[in-house]
Length: 160
Picture 1 (cartoon, rainbow, N blue to C red):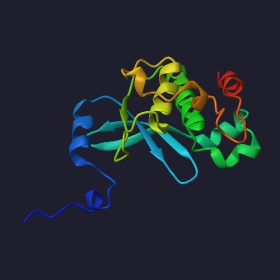
Picture 2 (cartoon, rainbow, N blue to C red):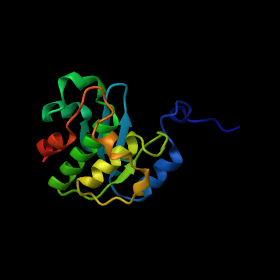
Picture 3 (cartoon, rainbow, N blue to C red):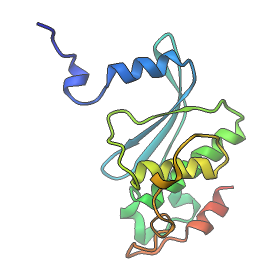
Picture 4 (cartoon, rainbow, N blue to C red):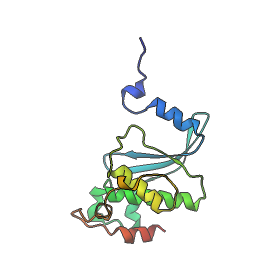
């Protein structure tokens, strides 16, 4: 009888997907959600050893104009979009290779934080293939649904 690996049992690693990502020999853009923030990391792998080149958390948005009153919504669709935009600009600035998106064990449902993050990366100028009907509506990205309004365009201007 085959035993299940510990990280698979804990729903942390899908080994088949990880193997396919490593075989591509391209850097990965890892996206993770925590209880408070959205985290993205640019990771390079050499012989199955991962090296984080740089990472960014949605907490960095506070330095770029995210309102202090909306601090509790740093894991929203708007925050995911701006985090993707921020890391996309960093990739362009450092002239790094276009990465593959690594979502780990997250479920990929249309119009969610994941696709908000992808839209931010694409809007930053990184070429990634994705169907546009999967992206959240502009009202959701601009934070018009939130109690504490967030001026996304102002924050995007501060990120450049």
